[in-house]
Length: 496
Image (cartoon, rainbow, N blue to C red; front, top):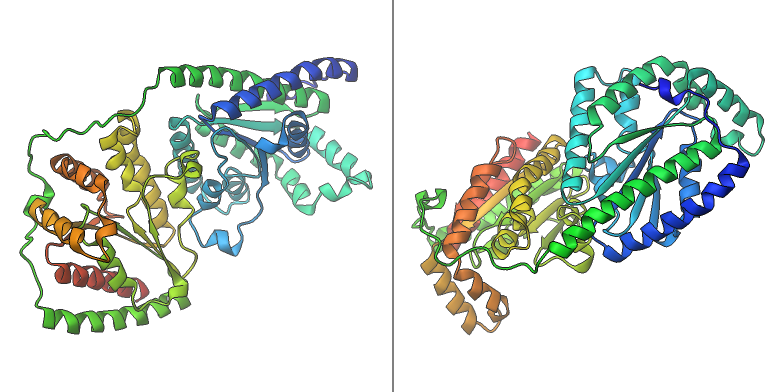
């Protein structure tokens, strides 16, 4: 695989100067078009053998293009803050917005590659980690992102000569570490793992480009010319798509036929007497407070998700659940229409960034399911977008669970008559009328559509790792106790 990158290709300084001016002009023009269109982010990853010029290639790109719209990120071992979240949290956190470029060094491929070289992970785990990367890249590419990946290569003899050259230069010797020499000693293992890595993850939408790194002039021009060609192609495609796009229109219909759903099997008559409720809510809150303190001490994180029809009691259930938790250890996030900053990223970005630190709790009042509910109904997400979102959501939730975070998803359900009753009550309330909006009344017209979309959510995303918990919420006291007791039961089991 790497023989073609060990040919000793060179570019003279004179030729470099002649080609550089044209290339730099082209890159700047393309960068400005990308920023103006603002339809997709650009992720450029650099990997390869030590001494092959990854860092200098990044420096040259920063010099050639406008650095205001470029962010360069070099990853090291995860910090305590990063290690407390799923592996891909820091890569989602560092995602460039649409129209911007991210340059990445020692990114998502570095850890599994070195882990395989040094025997810290076996071949099966290595493939699992690569599959995880593929799913990450597919989600971004499907959303329009341009991903370019460069493998900067040197043969074993070239690498040794390069490391000794750097070591002999007093100004550059700091760049060579004992780890670099250790990697050189494992060169054959390194290349074998790299071949597997590139073969598995080299896909049309996120392809690898192997660049010979022996001659600085050659590798800089090669990297720049590939970026220019791929960026021009991607811009042309995205501009055609933008020209053909129309304003979103409501897709759901008030005339949607009634169909049987999982919600029809719920017994909404379930209730709890007020006297019993007052007693059990205090006992439950006290118990959850104890478990919350223990979870913090054991660094057990929790994510609670609340979905359901408008006025189904999500806010009330959340307030009673977090009542006895230390306010410093939990945060409640309410999501409505995305902000301008959030629209400039993949729709999952705003949820990834709010995953809790070790021992803390994140509560999501509305969540990533908006993609397959309101965005589906309003036409803000195309059919292709909301259909693939089920798999993207499942992958996101499985990463949360696999990291050891306790994930509980609650769907609070009421019937159509109860919703109307609560809407009218809110209209007359001095402190609740603000919660009722024209949009709520508008969405109510689509009751059957949202009910069917909810059925699809349960069907496609209630997995063994992240099942949905359906809550009969017509009686608020019953719903609040069920939510509270469910959190207690799962947290108690998790903490042993």
